[in-house]
Structure formats: structure tokens, C-alpha cells
Amino acid sequence: MVSPVRRCSRTACGRPAVATLTYVYADSTAVLGPLATYAEPHCYDLCAEHSARLTAPRGWEVVRLADGSASSRPSGDDLEALANAVREAARPQERAAQTGGAGARSANPVEAGRRGHLRVLRSPDS
Image (cartoon, rainbow, N blue to C red; front, side, top):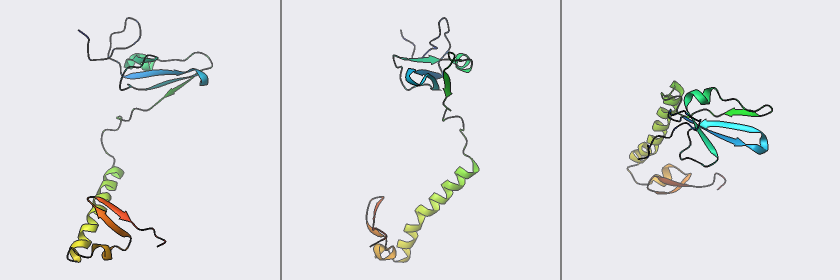
């Protein structure tokens, strides 16, 4: 039976892998990033301990890519941007309600048509 958890590629290490190491030989670079979606033949999966202690050969550079899941909580700026986007999305409906639902094109001279949630916009020049 094969374990669904990918293991560290280092010899005699059975810990679960958390990062993927790839070598770019043309640039003399070792790239360490988040665990790849699937195992590649020329990539190495590393556990947390081995990825933290990784060193490259002399003359090589190690590039550590940040894991996108590091910040799981939204910041205040993220929440404010989301609130502004919700307010902006609600505006066209307010204008359509003010005009009685008819004449939505005349309420917004830039909008040329609508299909579902998509809008066709006129060029600002015309």
C-alpha cells in the first residue's frame, strides 16, 4: 500500500515533505519553494528540517520562494479593499432602482450592454 503523504527525498528521512527543491543548472541556482502539486522526476521533496538547513554548492545561489499560505488572516487593508469592492458592485443596482429599472443604459453612458454579470463598455473616446 502506498502512502498518500509525500515523504522527504533525503536518505533515511521519513518525515512528510513541505517544500520542493529544483536545480537550475544554467544559472547555478537552487530554487526551494512550496511543495509542488505533484512529484516531478528531477525535483526533490524536503521536510521542514532539511529545507531549513539547505545549502548550495560553492558558487551557487539558493532562492527561497515564499509560501503563499503564510498569511492566513486578512489584513486591515484587505478588508477595506473588500468592503470598497462590495460598495462599488452595489452601485449599478442602486442607479437602476432610481431610474425604475428601465433606461439603465442612459443612467450609465459608458455601459453599452449587459449579459449576466458581464458589461460591455464603450470606449471613452466615443
